[in-house]
Image 1 (cartoon, helix red, strand yellow):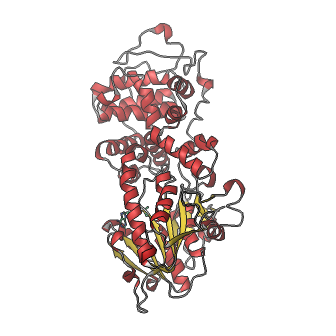
Image 2 (spheres, rainbow, N blue to C red; image 1 turned 45 degrees about the horizontal axis):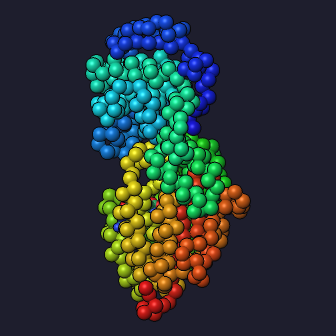
Image 3 (cartoon, protein in one colour; image 1 turned 90 degrees about the vertical axis):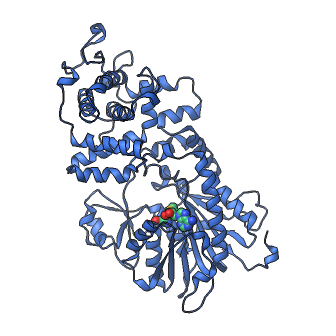
Length: 541
Ligand SMILES: C[S@@+](CC[C@H](N)C(=O)[O-])C[C@H]1O[C@@H](n2cnc3c(N)ncnc32)[C@H](O)[C@@H]1O
């Protein structure tokens, strides 16, 4: 959590005996004039009307506001818009950090802030002009989640409204934010969640749509974690993820990053957690041999390599490679072992990113295919040796991303249960194609950055039901071989024995892997390993 962020619900020092913030409340009418002075108390607040207060919009708030606007109105991705705004407005490091906390914080906590705002306006939020609602969200985030003095939060937000939207709504913003600041976060949450059941309460408290809270609760259960971890998991989604680094095996080491304050990863070898220094100054980062990559993703790719000794000449396929994080790690490993990686990606611009990611790896170790992964065949594995079928295939499938919500601040509000229906069909088709393209005896690694049951345990079960030529094999030993000694032991054990409807099969008891942000500090990656065995066609379902 940001240093600037208030400890939610621990702002009592600034609270009156009635649970209101400050004990020094101020009431103004919509024009910012003070009224109802009996309840005003001693709050130190500018006596000037909004029209006389802050005129210049500070650039950090402007960058954050423009980011929220682009996300709300244009369906843009916050993590792409904000860096562009920071560049365009020429923010220094401090302002860039403030803009990031404001924009990402307001987007992540939009659910909580909207619940508060709904109590402070006299109409449904849907009837508020969207730019005004965005300004209110930014103001609320400053008041309830950051160590910004109330008067600065309100003055700046009113000034921003006046400059970017117009003088008209600035009075409304002023009036509403004063209602917001009348209570601290703890008091708001108590009021908002009174009488609610667990799911709705956590939905408001941790700012997640209720369907996602429900899905994550179920995911913890099916992957063998105690239900009591749910609040911690949800809170982890609201934390800014640490920046993890990988040194591509055989091409770089982490000495430069470690000198800059990075610390070695506790999870996987060849990885580090950035200490916050300017990574782009490092020569290894510039030439792409040291890359930013979540250590959970590193573990997934490394588990495919560690599953069994690599034979020279092996053909590997990364079926859904864009933007190329795992492909870069796999290609570097392929180069070391005399194997070859075909990296496939359907979206042309993402295939371009894969190319960039792979450029630093010796070119004989990889090639790129741009196309639908559902059209790949065993013949695509052919090389000079004429081998048909891949030895190892990674299907890092397009998914809901419910395990990486902390990375994409707005995604929880965009995703719907309907997405799940479409994505699970695509996942099934990609897995079927991969199974066909696999050599008998070959290894299929299925991964998602979602712990949702439909994309994990149910997907495994469906595959085992429809493909009798595949056997689920234990992912635990491969993951342990890929991880640092002891990193996956005890509380951090991410493995769970398969126990689906097919558990009477020989593969009952083989483990799949589920990582968690609140346990491993990674995205919630799921991994299952399958082995293809030679079967007569008539045996297949
Ligand atoms: C979860 S991402 C893969 C992340 C990647 N493995 C990495 O580590 O950087 C899924 C990718 O699958 C791609 N994709 C979606 N549909 C596909 C299809 N039908 N065939 C191949 N790739 C597809 C998406 O464009 C996206 O780049």
